[in-house]
Image (cartoon, rainbow, N blue to C red):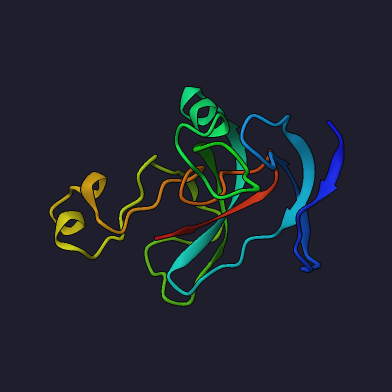
Length: 140
């Protein structure tokens, strides 16, 4: 894999597998470090996977924002917490579900995050996790 930069002018960088277009060969590239929002956390990813769902995104069957970092199966350790986060601490070990609900709508409150109208999906609505030791931002 070649090295490319997809920083867009930002200076804090980490390495990630990225593809620039559907069906194009993925490359190892520098990408911007995730920012920790007030209601979110940043996860130091320790393990991640890529599966058939990611293959569909890479082929354009499930459109994703390009350039794109694939992957949606991850586990890691919380590296940073936002100011409004109260249930998680730096150092907590976590995994991330494929569907991340907003946590406040009627569906999420009822335990049905999979039908949340404001859900996010790592690796589909935004970048997936990056290689081991990198970071991924998630809303709590």
